[in-house]
Length: 343
Image 1: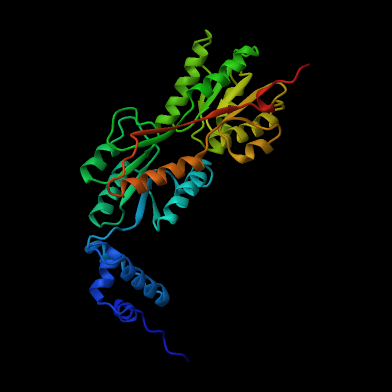
Image 2: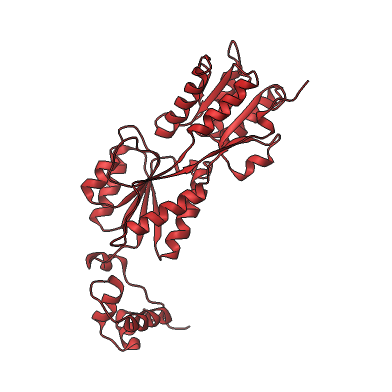
């Protein structure tokens, strides 16, 4: 039986690099400047030996954690069903990996747990910065980050002046284009299935939909909550179909709900693109392969994540400024589900 391999220590790295233990420590925590050639020799030695500095020890020494925190106040089971998260995180991770940073995601169920998580991370020097998403009206996290002196980038429109930079898609014009096109085609009963009513972007999409209808003298009375989930969309679609004057067109607040709603419509004998029109929101790749292909408002969440990652890296680099607001334009993509076939 072979002996257990001895654990490599900082002393081994120092010996191989021909420097002191203190120099090895300084080369990783940035506490003192060393010649670039010395740093390279130390890091090459560490790589050769497979040694990494202890995260807790680095935190005590004041070194960066090289980690970005992302607190998500949702059921973890919903992460895979929401098209936003995998695409957004892919964009963020691409930037962080290139800069030797990692991301840690924490799921919480309440505002109290959310706040405690931020405070614990700062107290324990677990993260260098954070991503703040799923914004709510009167969101307390902006002030909390100020209090904790914790760098962060906001994903979404905060709706007021805040200290942190914000990155988000502007889609008001696309929603109006979607509704206006249906009205021009003769639709007067245009419904909306919303997402989580506690979130600012849910309220914004509903408000623009309602304003677009009102601009044509139509009443925005056909609205149901789908919670951004398949099951929620199914329940909402069934409810809309039982209305005294059911809709001839339905705008779903994301593509996953639209796909689920299309299934309910088909089960009920309705022909999407034939006797009822449907549109979604997000622009997921799967939308074009539905039958019929789903019209949607396209948002590039991968690009959004890339920008958020780059802004975080800029915030954590001395001397680099970040724009207070960065917007990306969404675009309406009409497909067969949006049109009604001619008789």
